[in-house]
Amino acid sequence: MPLPYVLLSAAVSLDGYLDDTGPERLLLSGPADFDRVDEVRASVDAILVGAGTIRADNPRLLVNSAERRAARVADGRPEFPLKVTVSGSGELDPAAVFWHTGGDKVVLTTDEGARRARALGLAADVVPLGAVLDWHTALEYLHDERGVRRLMVEGGGTVHTQLLQQGLADELQLVLAPVLVGDPKAPRLFGPGAYQRGRLRLVETRRIEDVVLMRYLPTAPGAGSDVCAADRHWLALACELAELCPPSRTAFSVGAVVVAADGTELARGYSREGGDPVAHAEEAALAKADPADPRLATATVYSSLEPCARRASRPAPCARLILDAGVRRVVTAWREPDTFVPGADGSGVLAAGGAAVVVLPEYEERAKAPNGHLLGA
Ligand SMILES: NC(=O)c1ccc[n+]([C@@H]2O[C@H](COP(=O)([O-])OP(=O)(O)OC[C@H]3O[C@@H](n4cnc5c(N)ncnc54)[C@H](OP(=O)(O)O)[C@@H]3O)[C@@H](O)[C@H]2O)c1
Image 1 (cartoon, rainbow, N blue to C red):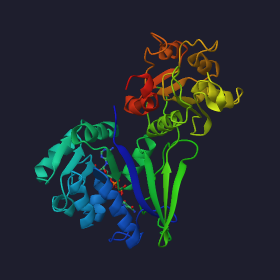
Image 2 (cartoon, helix red, strand yellow; image 1 turned 120 degrees about the vertical axis):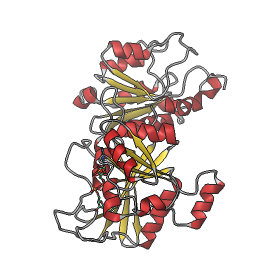
Image 3 (cartoon, helix red, strand yellow; image 1 turned 90 degrees about the vertical axis):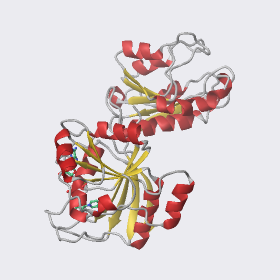
Image 4 (tube, helix red, strand yellow; image 1 turned 90 degrees about the horizontal axis):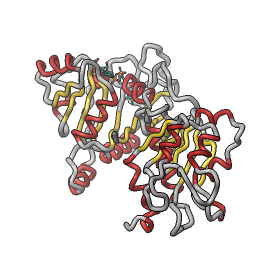
């Protein structure tokens, strides 16, 4: 099921703290960065914080710029993004300014928490999501029931930690402030636990007065049929690669990327790459990987189109090449239509060979885009 794009946003001290232990909120960035945050808020459908942040900071979480609010309204969006909090206990202060400023508010909580929150008379929709609060369910609710496509998460550490560890964060926007807290009792950005192995991808750095904004994307693929945010990033890249294919009237334009379990890109390719008129994307990518690389056994192949099951141009179809390379996980956007090979079932060949095949239909339109001339579109 599609989920919102989840953007984690935080400011941290040089020693990794979100705050100190004093009664006032520690201001880590300055006016120019607050204005950048305002711009990001204006771009999203909803802003989420944990109940701990409401208790500690009593934040308003508004779009402060009148121009940005007017632009939202002109675009047919609500003046303010939806404000969302998560609470297991339901113990929230009904007088907190969170409830009394901005637009609509939602409390995502447990069945037990909902009883308490309703008894408190919070000025918000109280939504019970079961005996425990599962993040996947919470994001699905925001996507399906509230139309949230972009979600900005503004802390605190407990919430950021869970979303990153569970592979649900699409992007991390981190501002590093030249401040040292040095108090082990202060809240940290990320707590202990299991994170993705390997390195995140740094996609931007920007100096803003005396702080530095860093934007990172997670890179490590999910496992088996479990899909994580990095899977969507890699499949989007495969769709971009498909746009590079030399045009053809007799073959699809496809992009492929091979990614190790720790998020390292091992190889990429696209159809007819390098002037080979019959090269397929997965074939072109796998040809660049070292066949003796032990990382292939736990790698994922992302292909904008389901790997082929049969082909006239070469003896081995791509589903077979993938299995022979030792890869056992494939993520694709689009099952192969009958255009050239009736009843092609690359997914079936892969599954019979022990590979997990995941189809993310939300990328189908992007995968089809360079193939419109073959589809009668
Ligand atoms: N520097 C920054 O950018 C920044 C941004 C935001 C916050 N902060 C700081 O971060 C600190 C607060 O962080 P925090 O980690 O204590 O709190 P938090 O992450 O804001 O909220 C934690 C609370 O959220 C609820 N929650 C989270 N995950 C849940 C789940 N899976 N199921 C049910 N409930 C869940 C629980 O509420 P219940 O207790 O009600 O069950 C939990 O106690 C404050 O000091 C604040 O100043 C800093």
